[in-house]
Length: 365
Image 1 (cartoon, helix red, strand yellow):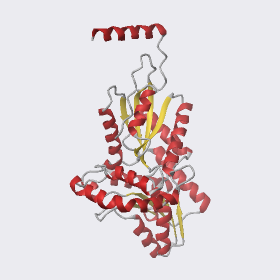
Image 2: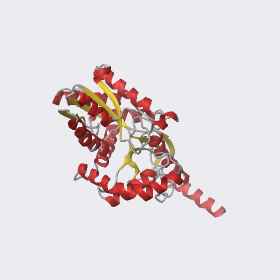
Image 3: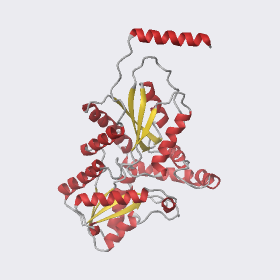
Image 4: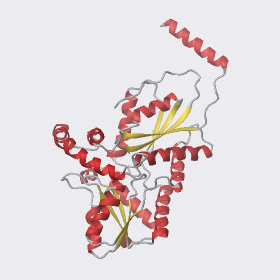
C-alpha cells in the first residue's frame, strides 16, 4: 500500500471531522493492462483468497493474470460509460450528495471517498483528510453485510496506513448496516418504484455476492446477514416466502460456495414455468460489473435461454434520495459525541505563543 507524504502539523489549525466512504474498487480503464494491475492487487489480498501463499501466488501469476484480464476487460467495456466506471461514478455522486445532506443538517464535515483496490487509495485519502485538518475520521465501508473479505479488509488497509502515520487521528468505522431501517426502506422504495413503472413479476430474486462456504464455517456472519436483509426486505414488501428467493452470485473456482447459486436458480425458475422475474442485488449500493454485466446481461441470458420470457433488473441504490438520506442518518449516529463543526480559529496571540514554545523546545533538543 502506498501512502502519501504525511502533512506537517499546523499549529492553530482548526480541528475538523472527516468521513471516508470506501467501496471495493475498479480498474482505471476497461483494458487488459488495467485489469491485470487491478486483479493483481485484489486477488493478492489474503482476506479475499484464503489459500496459503505458496500455493496461491503461482496460480495467480502463472495462470489467472495471464488469462483473466482480457476476458474481464471485455466485460468492463460492455458497461463502461463516458464518465468512466459506473462504480466510481456512483460512489463519487454519493460522496457529493452525502456532503450536501450533512451540510443541510448543520454539520461542517469533510467527506471523501476511496477504493480498497485501485484509486483513490484509502491511504492517500486518509492523508488528504488529515491535511485539511481532520483529527477525527469515520470510515464507512459501503458493504451492508459484514464479511472479512470486505469490511475487515478495508480496516486492514486503514491500519496499514496508521502504522506509517506519526500523528494518528481518532478513528471509528461502521461495521455493517444489513438491518438498518433506512437502508431497508430505500431498497423497498426501489422495488416499489420498479413495480409502479413496469408491473410486478412472479418472483423477486435477491442476489447477493457469493463467498466460499468455508467462510461461513469459519465464523463469518455474512451468510446470516444476507438472509436477514432478504427477510426484512420481503416483510416491507409484504411478500410471502414463496414470492421471493435469496441467492448468491459470482462463484469463482471449484470450491463449494454459498448456495443457492443465482444463475442456476434463474434457469430453474424458467424451467418450472416462471415467465417473468425481477432481480435486485441488495448487497451492492452502487451499480457495478457484478450487477450490470453479471446479472443484467448474463443472468438475463441464462433465464431467457431456459425458457423465461421477461427479466427485469432493478437498479442499485446509486443516487436514490431515500438511500442518501439513510446513509446520512447512519453517519450521524456513528458521529455521536464528536464535534461536527469546525472549531474557531486560534487567536493571533495564542498562535504566536504556540510558535514561541515550539522554538524553545527545539532549542533544547
